[in-house]
Length: 73
Image: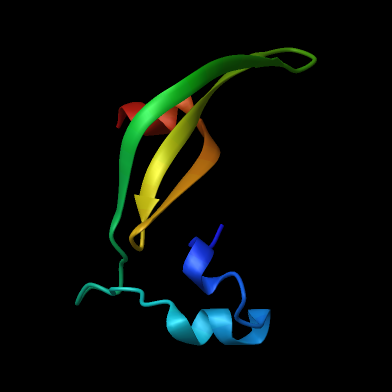
């Protein structure tokens, strides 16, 4: 979601306004802020633990579901 002061700008121009900091090794700065929820998905023969993560990505907060096991590493 864009800041309120950018809402009136036509969506075609949004990408050109955003700045993404790229590290020398071609990675971007993404850091988890906190776990918001935990859920177990039931498949036919196994269970998968997921966590809802609040990220700070490119200066913007974003929420995604991630594998709990991957977040522990």
